[in-house]
Length: 281
Ligand SMILES: C[S@@+](CC[C@H](N)C(=O)[O-])C[C@H]1O[C@@H](n2cnc3c(N)ncnc32)[C@H](O)[C@@H]1O
Image 1 (cartoon, helix red, strand yellow):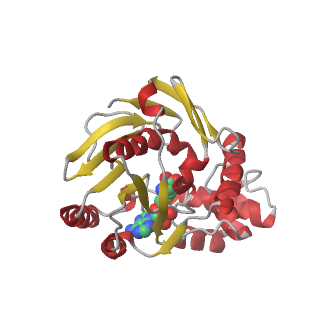
Image 2: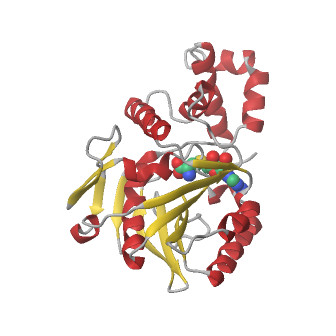
């Protein structure tokens, strides 16, 4: 059994609730028996596609650091963006202990626990995003009802605040749709990085996606990144996989690189959904 099978199954049950209006939680056993075929197909075919905008609370300081280091605008390439809700991070509002950032009138306003605060001078910085592209095996189109249902099915039905935030983020992404490319990012990244524009720093980033790659496939991805960094400067922001992390804690270690100048190093730790942030850099 794959490690994410239980998440797929819970997503499938929620998907049924959203499409058929049935209440799978009233009698889970009966639902599992009666809907066995549809649920089996969902578990087999549907990747986990939780698109969690709370992670932007941890990503923002990393984007600001890279934009400041180069003094340039950014061209973003997200690996495994799902619907691309984190590709429009600059259209959200943020409240940290040491300052605010972004659009205060945005429908998405993020203010999470900070275990070590993000410095005020970092939050004073601005960033211009020139281009936003994402590569996903199965990009979700939030302009369709089924796209919205699929995304929603991976937020658990009793998590009202997250469901409401997802709906608001979908509205933002509909107003500012990112470019989503369908395919395997390990395959497609070389060609996407081949047309880098010198007027901006290209930043490849990912959250909660490389953990789904087999170890050898992840090594292939790192080799693609290393090759691209030999051609031109490249930014990298990534939640580490468990086989990379030093130390045990319940959350993600966030690494940032600015190749070839700065090797990857962990700049923060954060909750799996960005619900807390421990800024280290
Ligand atoms: C759990 S979701 C995370 C979505 C988003 N990055 C976030 O943090 O909210 C993982 C995404 O990675 C995508 N994915 C996994 N492996 C991939 C691959 N090899 N190429 C492209 N997309 C991939 C899945 O389709 C899914 O949309």
